[in-house]
Amino acid sequence: MALSVRIFGLNSFAVLLPEALMGVATTYLLYATVRRYWGNWAGIVTGFIFMLTQVAALMFRFNNPDALLVLLMTGATHALLRSLEYANHPSGNRKRTWWMVLAGAQIGFGFLAKQLQVLLVLPGFALAFLLASTTGIVRRILDSLAAIGSMIVAAGWWVLLTVIVPASDRPYIRGSQRNSFLELTFGYNGFGRLTGSEEGSVIPGHGHEGGGMPAGGGRGGGMWGQTGLNRLFSGEFGTQISWLAPLTFAGIVISLLVIGRAVRIDVRRASVIAFGGWLTVT
Image (cartoon, rainbow, N blue to C red; front, side, top):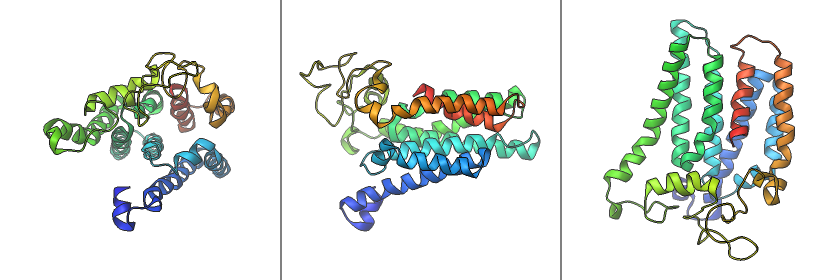
């Protein structure tokens, strides 16, 4: 967004243009990934549903890091699945490792966008790769470590700068109350999203007073309503996205039935595990 403003000047168009372009890129990546393993029409339907989902339409026209986060998570999923296509021989092993490095780098950059929130995809990624890779278990672990190393490098340079550059010489770490990277990572953009303690939000305070919602964290706090397992299926969340969740879980079951007793390294099953794990953990 800063680069766009330097090119076009400070205006709404310049600020929101990158968000819209990231929406287009995410839609294409999602289409290309699904098409590769499930056919052209499956990819088209997937992209069409994604474009028309209300929360996505909002996210890609909003001045916030979420658009970049979702683009990078989708790109990482694509790279992960591409890594599973190669046979177990020296040339294939090198290509697999590089795709895993790319996946890890995108997760690392996603960490720079929204800190711990990007890690929601990792359980599904780990299960899909360890199950479906064509190599032995040792090579699978080594490729996973290569991805983790790439993730650390992609995110670590910024973390290092926040440590070695004095606070007076760098921008304030927004989203924290004490100009702290750790507070932002583990608080507002981390466990605070689960507990409802939203200290550091652009809206002052932890929560709303009145309306049956006390200020502060815990089950009652959080400016976005009650925390808990039913949070996504009530209020604004239910109308914006969660109405699609039952259909999606049904799609996971149907996809696994279609795959049937395919071989362990079947990439279609890995795609269901990766995307399904992303959904379930989120």
